[in-house]
Length: 244
Image (tube, rainbow, N blue to C red; front, side, top):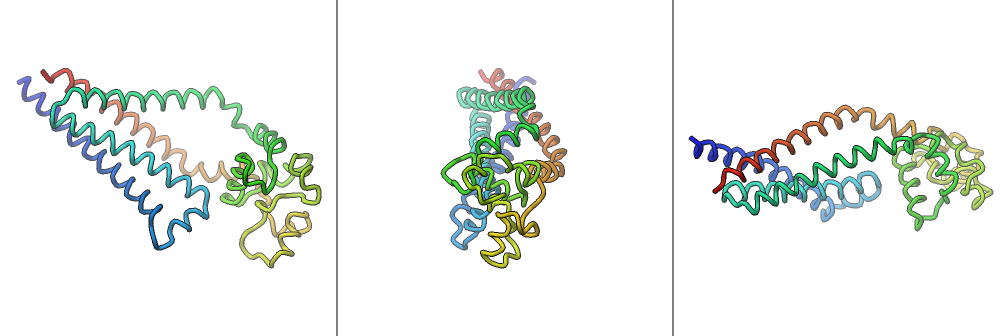
């Protein structure tokens, strides 16, 4: 009877991890295809900073799932204690890292306020300096979400950006990319004379509106992932203890 239970556990874990392995392989394939595609899809993704970051997130997730699935399948089918222990330790590390991230997000939640971002933007944003990580990140955010500042264009008043560029009221990242009439419209936008050529919505509201659509899906997905990880750890330990 004990042998039948062990055999059942072994094949359940193999099937379980085989699907994880397939999912990881698929994500890896998509990420590599986007980066190496000769048809120009890479350039399209690179033009959108959010999509470009997403490609590397997909590659990282794919690699992690591929390794987990491989270790789980090999450890289960070969009844190898070393592979099963490595699988257990890896998935335990991932679980603890997710738990630590959730705790840190709760402890530093006051740093995610509109006032905090506005204060940091005034102190550190420089305009067109692509060598500065803070500035280039904010340029990517404003370009991606079609927004300007944290609460609006007024965030650039009495800021480092105005000190560096006293003849500009807003940076070029705040200007609309569609329907340009040429350099004149850009000049009108940054000088404040062409309100119609710039984005007047703040990035804080734009990002909240964007992610609000996916927050429930993300929460449900997080619960599913944590449940899968717990089951995987239980399967691995049970099979580890049952192997002679």
